Length: 281
Image 1 (cartoon, one colour):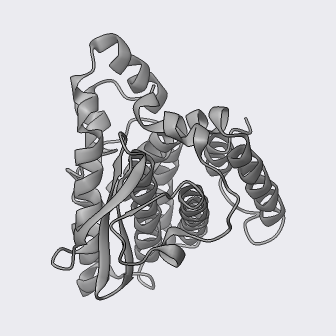
Image 2 (cartoon, rainbow, N blue to C red):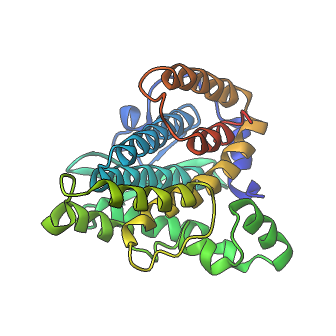
């Protein structure tokens, strides 16, 4: 479905354990085939860890912390999706904040400039929308296949909760972080907890949920849809890159051990979606 972006990964190796930020300097172009999958794998671990942690926070009535934690899971998914496309950002330090683009003709990654004047999260979401905007031009047959996978009925809903950032997730995160009225970890009573958790479970069960009055739950819905969206691309890379599949299998085994200890109470729907992402269903 996304061969436009994923075909190149058949040639990528995992023969070097370093990350892009470890090797990149001031050169104008790079061959990143030995490093890009390492970046994606490590970001995937961060996606999963934050998703699991958010679930435990919600279960224990820590809703504002849970929203912020799941926001970061969403952000790391955006970073992965942009890396897969080949248009992404690398931040090493204040004076080395680079925008990297893939040149499919030269098979090189170009590093045209520093990007110091735009908030890192906002630019990542803006780039996500730009990288995948072509999907909107697909014919109905191909788009319907994607809608079925994400389990939504129309493309507006699909884009709203995956790539368009119409929800303005960073704005929601900032409100939770900086507006004191949003912080109610001690105040939430058991009745409120049950009401919220029912809404949360409905979303992670992939059921339609209107979030008119509880907009913070948009972050959960974004996570659910974007997670499924990412799984489509990961599966394509797994098929053409055996080394990456081996690494994902190892990650899955490590998670199985974690499920017996720190994450033994995680919601079963979360475990299923992670197993689907790692191609272990």
